[in-house]
Structures are given as structure tokens and as C-alpha cells.
Length: 603
Image 1 (spheres, rainbow, N blue to C red):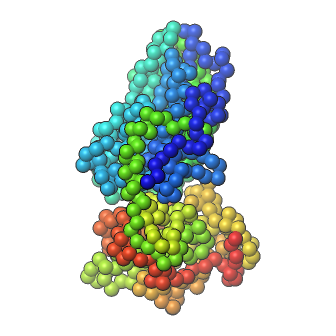
Image 2: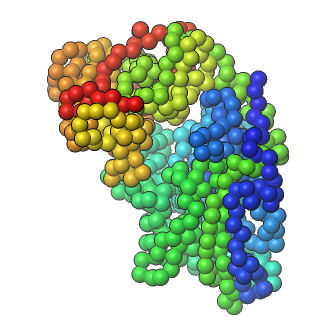
Image 3: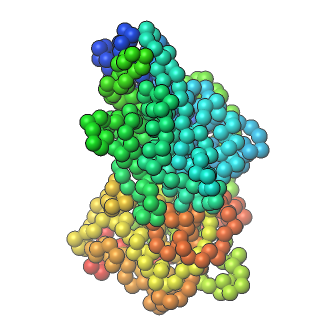
């Protein structure tokens, strides 16, 4: 059975690894500590999402992408050790900005198959405790598996999880530690007092509504920072660093469903005086260095986001000047280091190796077969059988469990192309093939909607497409992932839903020559124009039903099915029970892209 091995590129350690990672050593004048000046180093990771090794569990091989990034905290640790050695007598903090225990089969296995709530140590615990983190902010995905599992993981860590805006609904008091205060020795000078404030994402109230409703509220980042930054100042902190699981480019995927923005790190920097630097997470982008000016002053706050999955390490250098018995920040710079040339740290790898190998065996087990190859590569631009499979299984599960008057409702289902590289081969299908198709930890619900709401839902979804001038041939990039006010970096694939029918076909054209809001044409159910008043049961995931993506109708629609069934496991169980996946059972071409009513070609 294959096991994770060091990257073919990753063979370097120490100073050589730093050089290959793109490390630019600060000028000597800015790093001295004569007693009157000093430097605080803040190292940071974010959005590790269960990645310890440079391994793709869905491909059963070493991770690689078009930019030849590597992933995994085992490789990042090599860079961390090199920087600790270089700065061994200087004050240094190691932080994380959240989304740690969800995202790979490795993390899923120890949440759902052999959950740590029943004993055993989480693989991310085994890795991160060795690295020596000082604190980590909570990410939204920390709540995916429920509060009991999150608390079990928290108890295993030798560093605190921070969440100043995860509060008790009755008292408004944080239910996790809001901050820590670290006292760090400075050679030749007084100790340095650093406050680290942790902020998580308000969107948790939507995305994990079933897990947190009535138990935890999530007010805004700015609002809570305005409470706790002054408190840290009053407690004598010389420096205040924020770890925020919230992107730097202000926007919200959930629109105005909440009064607090999803991506608010720049707002925190601008609106809350007293912050020196922010380690940013959540957005999965690489921001080596960015400055935000505090409103009403000339002070600049440093922001840095080290990509995701351990591809990068943030290195933030805060220059300090002594003022009596305290220190003040006089300047700050940052950079992100690429981990792809670094060797895998043997200590971290050894601590997780057995768990990794167990999961590799698990995901490579054959659970069925497919009569033909099916792929999601073109799912963003055409109706493909592998997405039909998701819709069929979801709708069938709902249909079987509807009761009373709801049992007469015709059933629809929504699905999105989560992973363009997903595929089922012709022949044996493994658990990892199915898991690679449905990569998120969503549960299945169904809501009652009308024909008009179906139309409105589809119109909203078709914002995903860029407008084209007319019929012709286009590349996929020319038509997909449109920039919108709520998606300034482009609408992600996971927010492109199509709808399919179970009892009758739901068919429609998507005219991308037309403006958003008037693109869905020829919408029919069972061969007839859809009746705006007709009621349907529509299978959706908990993310969508909770308001994720801001789609209309489903958040407030009556729920007619909610058995808390994990959709990925539902698909796995279906293949295991039926043995054979035959597209003839479920695959039909129900929608197509057109321009001015004419079919277009997307290459």
C-alpha cells in the first residue's frame, strides 16, 4: 500500500530550505537587540485543513498542482525549525488562523470513522503539539463535526484555541478564550508583553447552524475587537497581534443574511486602534505583505496570509524600540515562504505516519464498480453523469423518507461541482473515488419550494457565468467563475448549483448572453412549462439550507426532511449497497449553455 514520502522536490533543511523558500533576511540594522531595539517574529500558518503530509488521498499519490506547490505541516515544520534556529535568542510566536480539523480523509476518519470523542488522539494534535504553537484561532470548519468533537480536540492541544467572537447567547461572554498574553524575554532589555487576540468567522451561524444554534453566537470581528483590544492595552501589552479567520478583501458569500461581513480583517485593522499585525486566514490566498491604515491616524497595520494547506509559512517581523520599561512597534514587514523545496520533518511525520497509513488503506478499499468512466472535468459548463449521480442519490434518499402529505411532492435535488478533478473509472470504484467527488462535510436536508422559487434559485445560481456577446466558441475560463459583489475573486465552483428532478425531468437553458436575473429559459418540469405555484421537495445540503452562498428561498422554506445524514457517506453507502454505478439509471442531459437562444461551444 502506498505511503506518504518526502516530496521529490523537498529535500532541503536549515538555511538551504529557507533560501529555496524565498526567504529574504531583514537588514541587520532592523534585527539588532542592543537593549534599546529588538525584533518580534510572528510565524503563522492557516487553513491547514487536515494536511500533515504532501499527499493527495483522492489521487493516492504525492500532491502536486500546476504551480508545483507542496502541502502539509510536516514540510512547514522544517522552515519553522530553521527560523527558530536563526532567531534562537529573539522573541518569537507561532500562531495559526484556523480551519485545521476538516478537509482531508485523514481528518474525516478521526472525526467520523474512529472519532476522537471515543478515544485516541487527532493526527493534527500529534503534529501541532510537536511544532510548538502558542495559540490558534478557531476556523469555521472547526465546527463541522459538532461542538463535542471540537472540545475533545481542544483538550488534546498544548496550546489554546481562541475565539473572542464565539460567545454564549445568554451572556455574550466568549465560550473559548478570547486572547492570550505572552511574556517574552528580550536580551539586554525588559520583557516583551504580547497580546494575541483570536477572531473567528460570523458565517458559522449560517454554515453550521445545526451544530451551533442556541449554543454559540458569532458577533462581528470588528465589534469584538473593539471590546478586547482596549482590554489588552489596559493589561499592559506592548504589542497586539490578531489571528483572524476572515479574509482581507471585504466581502460576504452570504450577502446580507448576517449583519457582520465574512471577510473583515481589513476592517478590523482600519477600525480598531491598537492592533499591530493580523495573521489572516479563511480566504485561501497568498498575501505576503499588505498594510491597512488605521482610520484617523497614520499608523499602518500589517496583514499577512500564508495561502492554505501548508503551502506557505507567514513570517512577520515587528521592529521594536524601548520606551522605558516597555516596547513599542516602530515598523513591520512580512513575507510568505514556499514549503515545496523543504524536506518533510521526520519527527512530525513519524508522529502521524501510522494514522496516515490506516487512512490510505481505508480510502483505497473497492466498494463497487462503474460501467463507464465518469468525470467532473466539464461539470461547470455541461450536464455530466457524475453530477447526475449526486442528485439522483440525494433525491432518492429524500423520496424514500417523505411522510404524510409531503410524500406526494415531486422531488428535486441540487448539486455543485465541488472538485473538477473528480472521476469514477470504468471498472472498480474505490471509496476515495466517491469521497473525491463530494469533498465537503455536508448533511442532507429537503425543503418545500414552489416552481417560482425554483426559477429564482436557478437565476441566482447562474451568476456564476460571465456574460458573453453572443453565440460562438469560448474557453471554460471565458465563461465561468464570474466576479460579483459578493465574490470579488470570482464565484467559486461550489456556488454553482444545478437542479435535477427525480420523478420527472427538470430541463432548462442557460442563456449567458443575457444579464444576470434573466438567463434561465425554457424551464420545464416533466415536459411542460413549470407551474410557478406547484410545490416540490428539493434536496439541499446543510450549507445551502443554512444560507451559505446567499441562495434565495431555501433558508426560510419549510424543512420536510432532515435526518442529519452525511452526504459523502450517503454516496458511499449507495455504491456499496448497489455495487454497480450505471449512468443509464440516472443520467440525462437536462440543461445546456446557450447565447441568444443558440447553443454555444465551450472548449
